[in-house]
Amino acid sequence: MAVLRSALFALVFYGWTAIAVFLAYPISLFGERAARGWAHSWARYHRWCCANILGIRSRIEGAPPKGAVLVAAKHQSMFETIEIVLMLDEPAMVLKRELARIPFWGRIVTAYGAIPVDRSGGAAALRQMMRAAEVAIAEGRPILIFPEGTRVRPGETPPLQPGFAGLYRALKLPVAAVALDSGRLWPRGRFVKRPGIVTMRFAEPIPPGLKRGEIEARVHEAINALEGGA
Image (tube, rainbow, N blue to C red; front, top):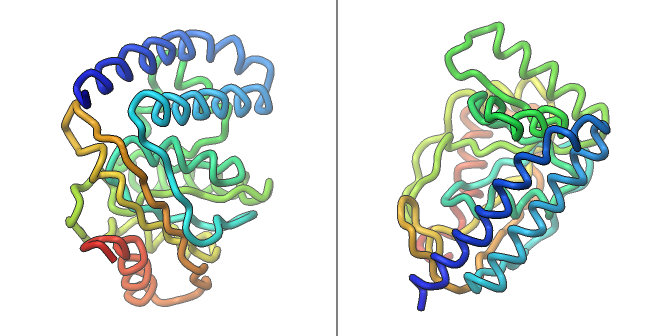
């Protein structure tokens, strides 16, 4: 049954996503509000497909933050990259520059106000990222980052990427860390997904101004709070 569910999900979700990507360009021409509305409707469609086809739903523990805050989330699957957008107030997601270059979809990513980052771009890329982040902060939007840098399997707790501490220091924002366990149901690199509940645990905000070692340790502990069944 899980194989059939996963195949149907791929057909239904990615089939409509291809159309949504094609339509993203003309919609984005109507401005940021239209682009964000279109992106959120696609995220809600993803939520519906996950719940009604895969049998995967999310459960929130703690309180999702409001306003300008740096949100640092665990990353185990594609699920949370879309689901968490619906839990926050129009977050500006830090993502790989390549995603902003996807034909058609890249246009709406840019119009939405995401923050593309060139990991090999050096100081110039960092300055560009900071300018985009400052615009989002001025609008009262949270900045969403996956500080491990890539998807990891359940039980894996790699160190945070070094860019996280630099972003935290530069933005001078509190950090809301998010632990999650999506990898139990949506394993990295596997086609078959299993039904169940994904827990998204929002920790109490960590204040700005901490030294690098302390902020990295506290965020690392918080995003891994569900590892080992905690």
